[in-house]
Image 1 (cartoon, rainbow, N blue to C red):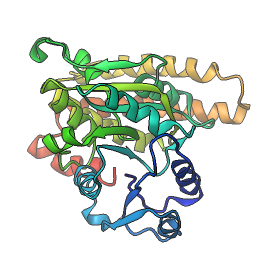
Image 2: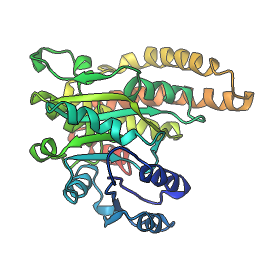
Image 3: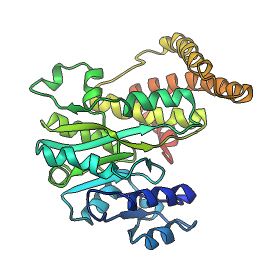
Length: 310
């Protein structure tokens, strides 16, 4: 299941790699499309995929995925995105095998490898969230959710629809919430709190990253912390007076990540440093506002703007 909107040449390569998957039989590719005009739908039809028309104004990350999963009949359903490039023909098999072997697993998710031009700060974040070389099974294991610290909860609900696979029965029990952002983590939280298990499969790898403006990246951070404060009680910047020190520390850390890259020219390094300095400021405000004020009635106009188009 791959939502699409003007996927371009990259999506052609993504689709070719999905068609080349081995070890799981023929894949039934379902693509909810929101009005592509660049040939994406032609590519899908040529590949034998099924398309669903989802008007852009009606697109919702949770409900759109529910509709697409409902259109399938398989025991295991792979969920991905149009710009996540599978790096091997056994990706699907690697995602499915743990679910086939262990009936207690509700879902699996794979590893994301940043593209070569990915900013070092974003590459580090991708590695922290969807990286690692060891398989991990995330489950409460008899622990009390309410007794866990927010960061412990966050590690348990690590899960990403950039590349994932769900067991149909688990999805039928807990369908994705109608959410404009973070439907994957919202679902994972319900699964884990309900006693279910999710497995990270490091051998299932896609190439995936984005180069956004610092403002747009901060807007996504705002949406993340809006969700995480509600779901997990996570508040990383509880008071405004902490922002100044946080920004200084972030800038120093990010400068180190950029300077460690010896494979780029001076112009690229300068652009990366300027972007990182901006992000350090914007992201701290995004975390502070998202966790503390996003649901206050007087903040609603700003909240709508910050979440628009994410």
